[in-house]
Structures are given as structure tokens and as C-alpha cells.
Length: 358
Ligand code: AMP
Image (cartoon, rainbow, N blue to C red; front, side):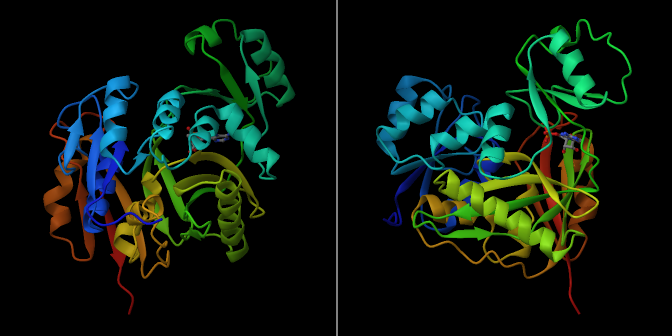
């Protein structure tokens, strides 16, 4: 059933993704309420209301459920128990199962392999001895990551061609938390697909973006990606398989490594709108944010067609000093997140350069 205009959509998380969801919601005639502990967060600046409390605060969750016709979220570390508690009172999209799968890298890769999507080889690692043995199995190279709560390359350590042991203290240095060792993928490029599934089961996938990271943070997303059409089709098909297997509603981001032969290994799924999909607001009639709102509100999905080639670039920390020059450029869409302090590594905004076609 589609939500009538004037209905309220609850959003858990008050960052820039919540902000852009609230803006898209407003454009479709909806009201938004944001649950976020930090006052005056980017999303609350443009939403109708903020509930200022922790994401797992029972009274705040009860209030969010009471005022919302549907609840969604802008980050994947929403406590599953909170999503379940909400889901008992109000529809929550994407489903809590997607959080459960995405919050733990071992669960995530196991799920992907189970539905026939290839990933890097991986093993869970809980101590230095297991690390030594697994690294040997992987030929001395691998990337060690925390199973949970990792983002933007944080909590990761790369090993290349290690001949012997000597890993004592590594797990402690990683915080004595459950870890995963992945084989080091010799990828040629990294791409991501932003896909959506509606309440009627329809799936719409945008063209894959080619992503460049700097210091573990997304730097640029370029459309089109320099990949063969079969690789693009395979990436879209994998994303469609994932959303169908999860009985998903909403937008999802799926990151892949592209190997030299054009084959794909899935790296990560993000059960939310995704930084590598920001280009859609400038190069598609229907942005990923509108697509997500359409899905959770039970509206028909929009056409994910891209009308222009483009490059999206993040503004990190002091990059915001470039804003005056960027404002002077033609065919450039700027988006700032309303954050007053530019700390190193902080995402302050992004811009998309549209390549004008002759
Ligand atoms: P992640 O936090 O999993 O998205 O990893 C951050 C970045 O590290 C990725 O975008 C890749 O550039 C790199 N990376 C992650 N996993 C692997 C892997 N198994 N092999 C090679 N590079 C990787």
C-alpha cells in the first residue's frame, strides 16, 4: 500500500544520508522525523523533527514508532534489536535481516556465497595462532579486518608476502574483537551497483559506478565504469539476486572487485543509500534517495536510467575550501551537508560534474 502525502517517515541516523533522504521525502510530499543522539545533526536541519536520543533508547523507539507510518535507516549499524522492536509496531524497511547480514563480514560473505555470489576467500580469526595458520593458507598475503563496525577502511591491516610467523600481539592491537582474514584480491578496479527493490518485488538497478578510494575513503565515482557490458550486467544481476534473497525493500549498495578477466568478487553490501550512488542526483531523473523513499513508501520505483556521464567527488575535511571555485564551474552540482566543522577525514559534501553531451 502506498503512503498518502503528508504521512511521516521515520529515519534512524542523522548524517548526510539521512539528510538527503529527508530532502527526497519532502519533495514527494512526506514529513520526516529523525532519531539521532547528536543535536542539530545534518538530517535534522532539513527534517520536520528530531528525536534526540540513542538509537536503542526504548522510549525514543516507542515515540518514533508512534509518529511514523514507516521507519527506515541511513546506516547499517542500527542495533538489530532496535529494528526488531520497531518492526513489531510499524513497518521497517529495509528488513532487519539485511542489517543482521551486513553488520558482520563473516555472515555477509557466507550469505553471498550461499546465494551463489563469489567473494574473496575468507576465514574468521580469533587469535594470533589462527592468523598465522590462515595467512599461510592464503600464501602469506591477506587483509585482516574487524568482523563488525568497520567502515571507510578503519580497523584493517594488510599483509603481503609474509614468509614466517611473528604475528604475536596482532589481535590485541586490533582490539581483541572477532576478526576476519580475507585473501588479498588482485583487482583491476572497484565498482558498485546501487539497486532498489519495491514492495511489489520490482527491482531497479543503476549503472555500475567505478570507485577510487583515498586513505580508505571514497574519493570519486565515475560513470560509466571502464568495464565490459557483460561485467556491468553481471554486477546488476548479482545485486538483484541479493535484494530478492533478502526480501528487501529500499535501496542497497553492493561493492565489487573487478578482476583482469572481467569477473567479479563481491566485497560488501550496504543496506542503505550509498556514497557511491550520490551521482544519481545529478545524472538520473530519479536519484537513489528518491528511489529509496519510493520503495519504503510503497510507490512504484522510478527508472534508474542515466541521462549523462558524470564524476562524483567527495569533499573531505579542508576540501570544502574548494567550494568558491566549484561554484564557478558550469555543469557542476554541489551538495553540502551543513556540518560547521571541517575535521580531517570528515565528509563535508560532494559534487558531481556532468559531462555535457554534444
Ligand atoms: P572495505 O572496508 O571492505 O570496503 O575495504 C576498504 C578498501 O580496502 C576496499 O575498497 C579495497 O580497496 C580494499 N580491500 C578490501 N578488501 C580487500 C581484499 N580482500 N583484497 C584487496 N583489497 C581489499
